[in-house]
Length: 298
Image (cartoon, rainbow, N blue to C red; front, side):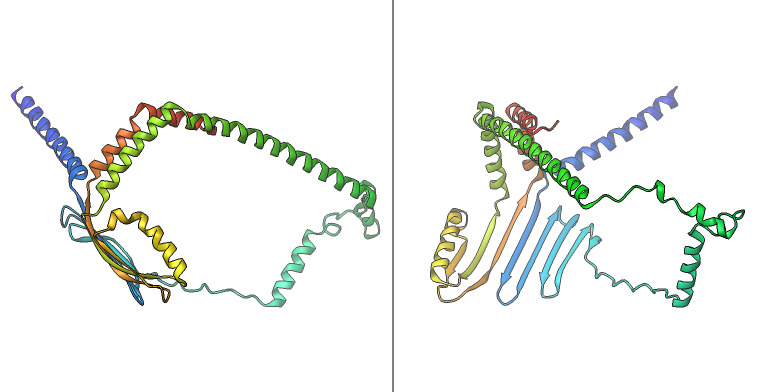
């Protein structure tokens, strides 16, 4: 009995150790940050580099783009588990040619063997074989031009009627869906679901914002008016980079030069928690169910 209890105790310790290891690994995945760095430079050529690390050397992913092309590497505990390689050029397959005489002779023999009237009727004399090969009275008569024209007009009319019927059904279905979507957009639950989604999206975007951002860009278009217009579009994002990126306009020529460096960290648990808060929200569930019902989904 003592041995049985000892075995059970060992099994319990092993199971608890495995459970603890799984929980620890899950916590590391959720709360250990993924640290990333990125750099892009554009002058005559483009140079770009990106790296992301999780728990230092445990997991590392790097991407490099330069004049030699795109290269990437994924390492686990220092060992490469995935990386870019030069693709091998497949060798062309050898084509087999046959002599023209042999091919035509074989083809002729095959056609002769498939044609009736020779070895198929061994008991019939040659002068009587024509009787077996003539079946013209059983063949369908070839329709005249008027009959063919009538059949074509009838087929076209049926096609037009079918298309018109399908279009009518589609328009009716689209109108019904449009009315359903309009009611869904103005529904109170839909507005509350959108509010929850907006709040969590802003949280995620703030979390994804780089901790360091630095760059300088020189931009010019073909003419000063286009340059000013596009710089106006860029100014919409001014609150995000106002003290980090220096944009210099060039009104004399078309050019895009400069460099940009950023680094930051991403915690999967933070993003996952925001996603779960959206998915578990009652109003979001009801809105998604109504949207599927209107769209005709399950």
